Amino acid sequence: MKKKATLRDIANICGCSVTSVSRALKDSPTISAAMRAKIRQTANELGYIQNSAATSMRTGYSNTIAVCLQDFCNPYYATLASYIESYARSLGYSVLFSTANEHGQQEYDVCKSLIEKNVDGILFFPTDQDTKAIVLLQEQQIPFVTVGRRFYDIDTDYVVPDDERGAHLATEHLIEKGAEKILFLNVSSSISSARERLLGYRKAIQEHRLEEHVIEGSMQFGHTRELIRRMHSSVRKYDAIFTFCDIIGFEAYHTLRGMGIHIPREIKLISIDGLQEDVPLPVHLTSIGIDRRAMAQQATDLLLRRISGQTDSPAEHITVNTYLIPGDTT
Image (tube, rainbow, N blue to C red; front, side, top):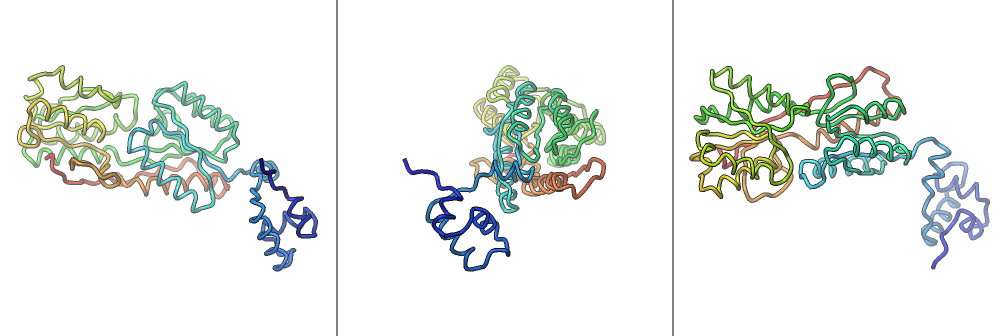
């Protein structure tokens, strides 16, 4: 096995001190341009890789941020992760990813593990089940930003979509298309985005003096299919369904089609996420778009400001715009 190259190996070949090699690799002007070039060339030829852990011990920074997601299988999180990684890398940061799978204790354990890895800060997609992980991050004074969801009882930096407006847009669109009996397939009210989307739905329903129909479901694969199948023929009393997210929307679409229900002639269908803007999908689901690239960049920028100490202001709250993406299901 080839021996790992060290600073001393480079120094011996170049005829200089280890300190000079270290300074040259940092592009220090105290080392001549010719010697810097020679040292860099030698380092490349030897396959030298800098020990980031040692650098972190000296500087106190690892130039690494972490992202605690809920579910990589959900394209919503996967595309956000891609945007975060790409943007952070362009700013000179590496990114570590972990998932909590909507489980409070796992979320706490993930955050504890990330702190132990000496990351500079965390972009945190919370479960909203409890605040144990948030309290841990605050106690350890780790810079963090919650993304996609927020807490009502603890004030933190956050970047979220305008969920209430998005749900209002979705419901208004269905009403404009002639729907009068609109079922909202929501998820647990412990999630801030679920509560705010319910507010937007209710606002539109009340404005048009329609009857509210809400069922609390789950993003877990297969749950929406079973829920709709248990409704049997009663699902046909609705002329439109609004789902909490695209994952639920697509599952509802295929289940309804399998029951012989035509979309959109018999039941109109709309959702929130706008995944088709980032992922090629065979069904053009009418949806409320969220600018995930903007969310990723604004959350990363806010986190880096906290890490660098560029801001000591109170918690910053950023809301990203939502907009209608017309599709084939309404």
